[in-house]
Length: 126
Image (cartoon, rainbow, N blue to C red; front, side, top):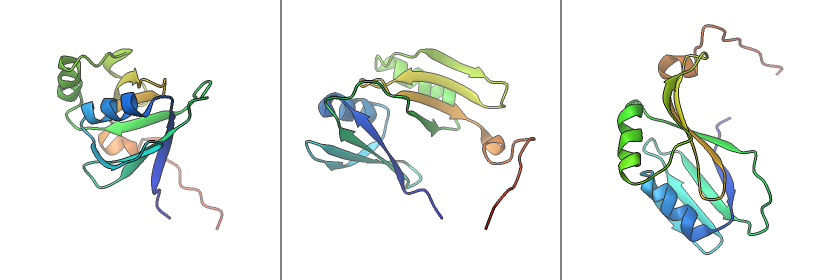
């Protein structure tokens, strides 16, 4: 089984699509109520318009090997960060920001620790 994509709810489609293009993603679907973006590795994520959105507990993670350089590039485009890249206790380097609809975004680099942390377990009930 493979994860196909993640869809985030947004309050304003124009603001949201501009924001994600500024992050560097290629927009491949553009409608008034739905947009999809392609990541460099071919994965996709999408946005769905929800003007009545109250709160959002969603977090989306984007991995980039040159994290610090990417964050500096985004700052030069006036993207505001809640926290700049720092090494975390779970062995990832991570920065945090929010999109215009309040979705939590973490930009990170985990390298081998993303799939193979020292505390990895393998469980399957099939």
